[in-house]
Length: 372
Image 1: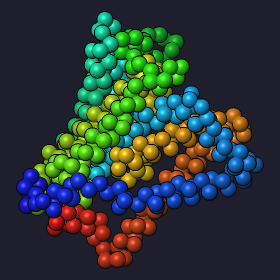
Image 2: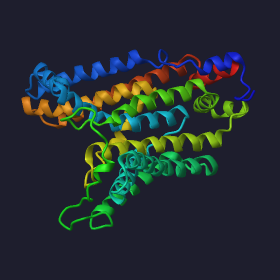
Image 3: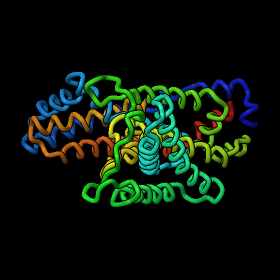
């Protein structure tokens, strides 16, 4: 049975988002458990947990400016995270979100600086397309290596991340984009390339609109198209997918390329809407954090939006918590680490239970869809 000629029941399986099947109760429980353990850590450090958490929520959502800043911190994670989730659905492990984000920043800044005479209606889309194109290339390369040479995508994407980050440092440390020997930064982008503000008086740009639009688009692709069905079948069981006629190699390249484009877009939106220039430390590890966001969201594009908001809340509200209670910044890292640990532990327990109930649990979803 080929995917293009799938039967009606199989086509029905395509349009069924696995929202209720993805263990959202377990995810929420893992977050709450992490906060409970974090309460003990705060108390042990001599900080009132209620005061600390109240300050965190107030700092993240206590007013228009606070909410806007939380969304600004969440936006890059949303865009990069949706791309990473797409590759997870295909059974691929893309750790190259950092490389794709960084090269997107570089490409958007380069176009934003080099073409100051373009009208905003042309300059902004061109800069974003450059960011997406650059990110797509950094997804395409490991995708081709994986599909046709069986090069492990974890290794190739991770190595590309380091290479790209250091390439960014080279550009700014007396490199081609450096404007001063005293400051490691680029020239500012032209005003014609700056994304308009969604909320005046804040740093929140219209780039925020792209996140839910792309989440809807990726979800539609995954659950309402035959190509998305084939991609998810490949993620469950590549052998079954090949037997069903799925072109695994081209889909591998497609998934990695689209993921890279979304990662690059995340960098482009950050430069055009928030930073307006490249500077040392512009990466902020958004790409690596997006990997965790996708895991927390259980690869659901809509869940990525919520998980990104959680990390944005911790990033922005954490500053207020530190200022109010004097707690160490490391406490926030502990809480984030606990969230990741409990979510990972939940997956390990689920896997072990699946093995004890008869094995092959990971292949069952794909087998069920093929059989239907």
